[in-house]
Length: 405
Image 1: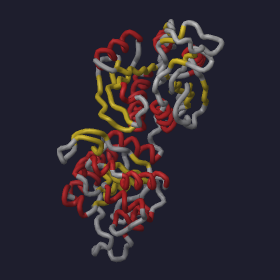
Image 2: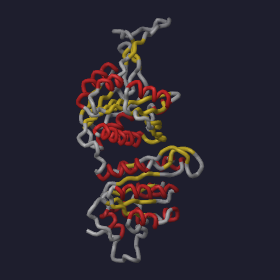
Image 3: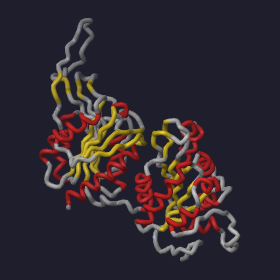
Image 4: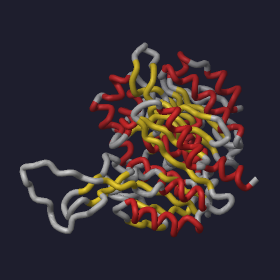
């Protein structure tokens, strides 16, 4: 079947919607990346987008004419938005403005892009980019909630300096993250198909008496996002989960634990059957040396709590792993992030350590650094934990390929 613009539809096609955000130029890089993967890209630009980036640039990169008009004069016999809707194996709107999100959420179709989006049954993705005030507006967040409920995948923006000169959330997510999300949408990003991966998540609770325990503020969101991302890449995921604020995702095997000792036993038992361990759980460093069998009563005086160190699970696992197993650790710091993370990376014998600020605990976003054993590092600006997790899983894929090489 031929597409409305003359391109053959014998390969996967992405309808790339470009709207009037200052980040529209970044969609050129995305189009080029997808094209190099052998994906057919057809750009559909709004009038505002055309004022920011010339359509000729997209035509040069994609090899296809840009779709712009709902009723193009040069193709009067074609119902353009229906032809595009049928052609697309996936729709990605990058960048997506607040205006587009509002139209899509409420089913408005007053231009070519919104009409094609409304008509297609293909999976859809939006990568918003806008001013922080617009992004945080409850109306915009409400529209996003409607889109997600309707099956849209949303690649949330990062925090950073914006075109208006302010700083905050609203900066378009990194192109490589959006690219991977599109590949997942097409079912192409399954580099971990059949690979067994072990992930820990949540926190541990170390009992002091039957009603009290030592713990931390970890919500479990980061570890659960990693489990989802690994499974989306085709991995066979075993999730060892301590207490958490949210329900765990669907995985191949779920093991519930409470204490650091229970988590250690579960990790060491599962490790031999897995190609990778991602130790995202926030394990308590110390536990009460003695756990009281009955509730400690108020006495009016001081009570001394003696602590004993918990086992260093990730260091033990790294030291006992079989050849070719990749171990990823996390470093949560309140100061001197780089120095402390590098020290842990070397001391524990890890392949990769994810270093982030303690303020990420309990939050829906994250930021930090990736430090690799071979010496390179990568800064990750503030982004949603799902996007952060996908980036980590992508780096895991590279480490596993290197281990196999």
